[in-house]
Every structure is written in C-alpha cells, then in structure tokens.
Amino acid sequence: MEPSATTNKASSLRWALLRRALLRRPASDPGRWPSEEVLAYYCLLQADMFRSKKVIELGSGYGLAGLVIGMVTEALEVVISDGNPQVVDYIQHNINANLAAFGGTKVKSMLLHWNQEAASDISDSFDVIVASDCTFFKEFHKGLVQTVKFLLRKVGRSEAIFLSPRRGDSLDKFLVEVKESGLHYSIDDIYDSKVWRRHEDFIAGNDSWPNYEKDHCYPLLVRVHL
Ligand SMILES: C[S@@+](CC[C@H](N)C(=O)[O-])C[C@H]1O[C@@H](n2cnc3c(N)ncnc32)[C@H](O)[C@@H]1O
Image (tube, rainbow, N blue to C red; front, side):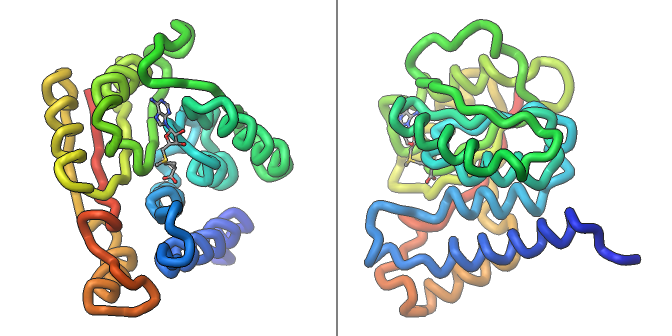
C-alpha cells in the first residue's frame, strides 16, 4: 500500500525533530534543552492517542510539541499555554505562521499560570496534557499538580505526559506531590529505542554534546492519570 501524505509528512518531521533534538549542542546554546523536541518527537510516534482529543500543552515555551500535535495527529483541539504573557505572544505568532498546516484541528494559545486560578470553563475538559522540562521549579510543584488535576477530563482515559530530566531531587519531589494529590503516575527512562541509543552515545563520550550528563540532560517520561 502507498504511504499516505500524512504518513510521509509525519515521518519526515519525526526524523527532522529527532536529529535536531539529539544533535543539539548545549555548549554553544546553553539556555536550551531538547526536552521539548523529544516531547514533539514522542507525540509524533504516539499520534493515535491524540486523534479527536482535546489536548493542552503546559509551560510550552515556543510550543513546538503543541504545534506538531496540531499539525499531524488530527486532534480535535490543541491549546498551547504558558504563564508568561510575552511567551504567549510568541506562541500566537507561531500559530498564525502555521495556520495552513493544522487542517481541521483548532489550535490556540492561552495564558495559563499554574499558581493562579484558571477559568472554570477549562476544568475537567482535556483528554491529554503534555509538558516538557516543567518540573524543576519546586515552588510551582503544588500549583502544577493542581492544574493537571483541574484540567484532566474526569471521565474516560485522560492523562498527562511529562518529559523531564531528573535534575537533582526536583523530579522526585514533583512525583511526591503527584502522589499526595491522589493522582497516579508511571515513570520510564527507555521509552524510545532511538532516543535511548543517542543517550548511550553521549554517555560513551560522543563529543557532539560535551559535558552530557544524564541527570541534567536526559528527559524521563512520566505519565500521570487520575
Ligand atoms: C524550562 S521552560 C520549558 C519550555 C519548553 N516546554 C521546553 O521544554 O523547552 C519552562 C516554561 O514554563 C513556563 N513557566 C514557568 N513557571 C510557570 C508557571 N508557574 N505557570 C505557567 N508557566 C510557567 C515558563 O514561562 C517557560 O516557558
């Protein structure tokens, strides 16, 4: 059978993202980490879980993962959110620049700060939440967990997907907060064989990422559900 246009688009995007994410050199670009790109790549691989679903990205930065979900997974709606108004302006700019690529999926930006009360009309309404590199702000752990609990749809199989490096005890502390809130989680470090192989290359001393260190650089996959 001939691969569809959507399949071709998804697989070339997949490779471009994986290359970009895992060949990135933080030494020359110290403020950026690949968790967002790995999240986007992971969402592409799991495209089926977003089909016809309402999705929100939290703390999205520029929102690559949300944009990719909007482009290739046939989600019903994708909200790309951040707590910084200036970042939300960038997100909206990115959405406007890619409008033609979203097909029937409604994609929008939202200002959403985890420590402030969110509008009641978005409670209990998302099937999938995604977020990358958002668990190292210990002061926001409680707010982030409460936001996840507030947003997840209470009926059906809703879940939140986090990609986060462990970063000292910050991820563990976040998971304690998750458990104390009554939510459940699983954690996985080998969730994709290609991502894991690149990680092993870096550990073995591949000098395209000098000073690579698992604790600080490698995003673990955490899935949270009600
Ligand atoms: C480390 S960046 C991660 C951005 C992107 N997801 C990535 O992996 O490149 C954290 C993001 O979370 C947002 N953020 C930080 N604290 C927040 C809060 N309390 N509420 C909402 N967003 C927050 C920041 O504005 C920033 O865009």
